[in-house]
Amino acid sequence: MSLSLKFYIAIIAIIAGVLIGTLLFFEPIEPWWIIVLWGLSGWVADAFPVEVRKINGNKWVIGLSMTFNLSAAVLFSPISAMFISMIAGLPALEKNKWYKSIFNVAQISIATFAAAFIYRCFPVNLAIVKIFAIAIAIAIYAIVNNSFVAGAISLATKKKFKWILKDVLIDFFGLSIFISLAISYLAIYLYPYVHFYVVFVILGPLLGIRFVIDLYRKFLNTKLEAMYALTKALEEKDPYTAGHSERVSLYCEVIAEKVGIYGKHLDDLKIAAQLHDVGKIGIRDLVLNKPERLTLIEYEEVKKHPIDGANIISQIPAFERIVGWVRYHHERWDGTGYPEGLKGEDIPLEARIIGICDVYDALTTKRSYREEFSHDEALKMILSEKGKAFDPKLVDVLIESADEFDKIRIEHAPVYPGVKK
Image (cartoon, rainbow, N blue to C red; front, side, top):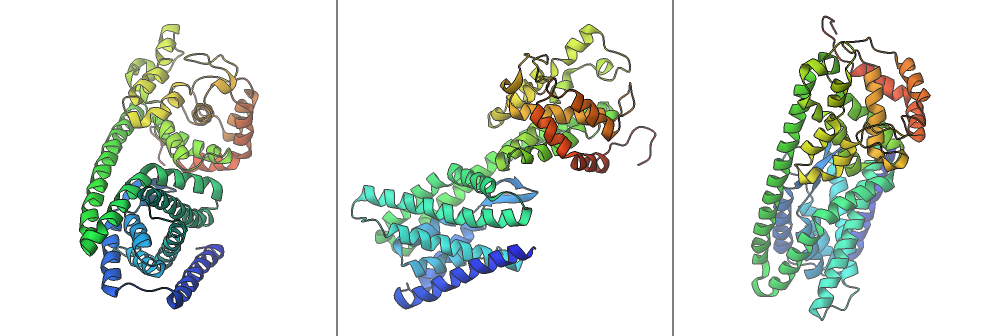
């Protein structure tokens, strides 16, 4: 852990400590049994988080304790809500690094205080005003919570804060805010009638929603893994292309981050890069592995693979965004590519990135009909096609990233038939 990240965590912990110390003198505290049991209910909810995706190999999850934190922020005093959120934010039973636990407990308590403070700025005598006030409190909670998290990720990964914040906020508002608003309001409305037993009323729906979301995520993962299996099967047909899709995905990540593509957008691009050649599964082996020059008819067969790949991917609605990226990865900047002859910026940026990375990997690996070109030779050939086959800006980015490309090329080099690694 870097010194800057340690300092960042320390500052957040100090802010939380100062807030608690100050509020203890001015705010009433609910009975401790309510605080503990409400907080433990949030902890149980957080023990079953929703896994959204992975960032830099780490799981990005959204916990479900937010509903308990927000309802506590409305129903109880700010100091009570802070203590409840701290209990809910404690790590699960498995081991967790101490500084992560401190960071999580501190930042979530600050976010809960911010929500409680903002809520109290509204006159909430009318039901419609209360709904609006809770919605604003959720928004503030999200901004504070995700800003702290994005700051930690930025310091840990050395990536731009604004891109990470934008990405995690999209995940938060897209998945959680309406669920949290509805269930939080339900808890607040029922509390005067059933008191503490309301935690059982809201815990059930929360875990049920989590179960449904998890089933859907597993369904998507199964579909994606099936497509990856198709790609692997395709590469098994031709040992010279083994690992091609994985390398293209890694090259795309290098360029994407240089042009401002991060987070979910980057994840989608890497999936598209992994699947860009899946349409080749329908090409005959004698054409795919032919050591001589293809005939015109055979070349026309090969040229269909971007369309076939896009059609395969389009069967999954969640991957609709990447269909065009796969379909157009063989288009050329000058309009002479296929399948539709798109030109310049009419070609999706993501397809242009996949296209240039695809060519680099093809040039620097062996084929049944030729030897591989060296890293420097490949760069010269790509540079010669600047403004012709490739987006000039992307060529410049690739040249600037030459060392990173070369490192990936060496570390992920394929093992050719008859050659020991």
